[in-house]
Length: 306
Length: 306
Image 1: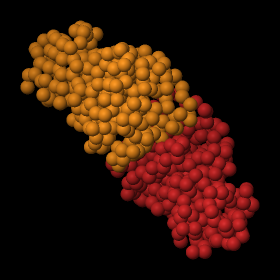
Image 2: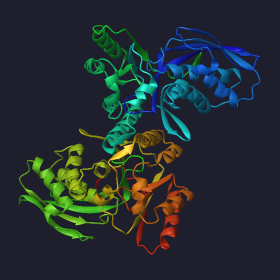
Image 3: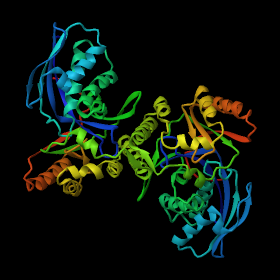
Image 4: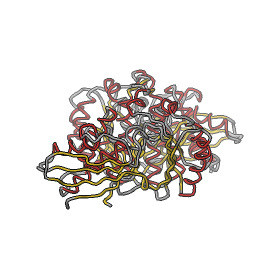
């Protein structure tokens, strides 16, 4: 195989109760990428469509993740990359993660899969680090493994694929304002109260128990965030209205997607997720802010070959 | 039914990664209690064997929990209580929880179960509060529901019974020094770093995923405590030697039981749990400190009628 065309899902990190540890991949929102083996050593980005992003390898997250891969690889040739970007940078649904993850998964497939998925996550984390300054694994894990993932530990890196209840649907609204991951990190405090920590890990536990027992009510009750949402929601216009509207429309839970500004809601069944989308439209139409809304199933396979 | 004789399990709270939210009931360690309906209104403790504890209703946790029950009950009579105490107060394996939980479960059975298990937890929490100053639910939930429980939320109270892998065995050593729950709370800080919080909820998530998938390796990796163990382990003589010895003997994980001084280890299979017990004996025999060691399966039924 000399070239490969892949789809890389958008991802929702944190999922309210799992800051920096939970991620979820979307089935119908994502980027595409073509990666081609070439004889010249190195990573070369030949085309980027859809977004205005740098083609210089060391300035592009896909290039940086690809270089991390190359450092550990014995391959003597190079790769040419075409990026077809659908996910807007700074949207909070894993734009940099999609590029970082897609390139290393594609390169790995072209070379006969010398690296494990966990190693690919580590390479992709270098791409993530170049954007946010922190090598977080929550988005790239979900993109690479698919489904709903838990980063149990960063040192050593340990990723758990969690059970996915069949009827979970996701609605995401992306208000077209940019919040950089690095900026949204700045509003966080380096300390939290033990009291809020207890609430947070109680809910994370409930969420995971709910996933395994397919108990939608428990999943909904657990989608709470005492740590990050109170601080970051201030950066997102009409966050509380969207949350209230989504819950009134029947969502199980609603919160900030990653570092925002996107807001996600989980629902039981596609109809409910569509109703939540209508409620979001209704609220945002009045604001004068451009926005996108997506309704999606959960992607269960991760990055897929097209 | 005019009287009832119940067994109430000892319990391990926190289980390293779930401070204030996780609890586990032991099958073969616990108290017994006889509760008898009487015509005279009120709660009367007529006998306590095994430990030197107050018989005055308002000074005894069983009496206090019983009074919380009576406040919500329409029953016009009273109860006489005999307590056969096996669990030593201040041991860290739920002595007060056993008394608080047993009395309300027994009274509920005698009256035809007017209250739900969740309501019984709330009554028993008043007994707990009288000892530690904090109405914690982790021990009493495990005692009443049995198995391994998660207190997802305190407000509203929500208790989740988690899946129990068949081969989990528990070894517990109780060094016979007393640490009061209120004292062991004092060493805790009211704030934690976000970084340690993330590690803690990552591990709690891993532990719960491990319980549902019966992945013993994952359970073991997740039994880590970045919040409480570093502070409380200093109060427990030879804690680190016991932990090291238990892990070398093949335990999945080892940590402080509740507020200590008891130390628990989880193992896969009874043989491993017995080996861990031998290692603990070997270490503590040299210390000159009196101790008990128990090896137990997990109690799956909670408080049971004898």
